[in-house]
Image 1 (cartoon, rainbow, N blue to C red):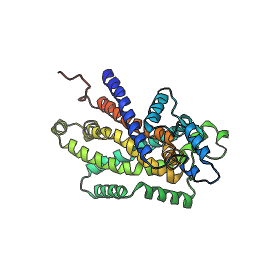
Image 2 (image 1 turned 180 degrees about the vertical axis):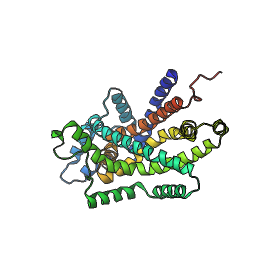
Image 3 (image 1 turned 45 degrees about the horizontal axis):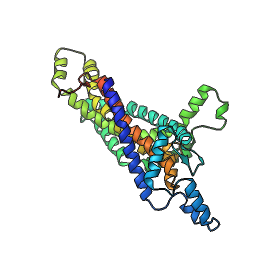
Image 4 (image 1 turned 90 degrees about the horizontal axis):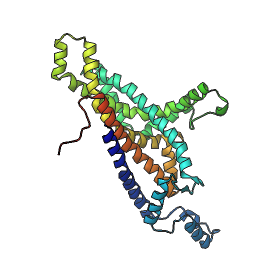
Length: 325
């Protein structure tokens, strides 16, 4: 197990560097740079633009900028944000916490909603409740994240039950620890719920299908023939094995959460990586954009590794052993 983890962690390094290289090529291929808009200002001389381009290293070829960025990344220096006039690492550190907490709450929402409903749909197959749950899942999947985010904004504005935008209220610093936690959860509830709806719909379908398949296996029929209680057969022997495909989907779920968070954060004004990526993209801030894309790739690759480890932990049949030559 330890050897497998070390090998996977080492394999992340070239993958992340490859993603960064591909991103750098795409950024360089786009017309203009951060100073293009400033150069359109008639009050700014071409000499000033040239001086700034030299100062920020934008006059160098993209591959030199890339290797300089990689060398700095190895020492914890992700470059300087031109649009925010701050080190990129400081900006990323603030936003990563917000996005990570939002993704974690969304994942908890999705699992809390999908597993019980998926089990109910499987146990009452082709009954009215199964048809309602399946139809509702397809309905949720038919709505894009943008539409759900706009509905959430409309609901928050009309009801006044939830704050719009931000992660904290005025006077947050003066609140007690419990009040700070509840205030953050109050701000995070609506975007996390929107972010978890589509994932919940996918998980409900997945749990239903896999549980129906598991309950038709021979060992389940044997357990029933031995007279084991129905609850034990379903939850101990059936559901535990039915959750394995769900765990395998965990890595891709993190990527889906990040892509969904991009829309949700922008629409609901949640200060996370998604909104920061959009700002970096619109302002042509190369080092900030590179850091955001690197974070996304690490999240996806790390999620796949975590899914493999969880699958090995929950399923005794999965073991990481060295193959015989």
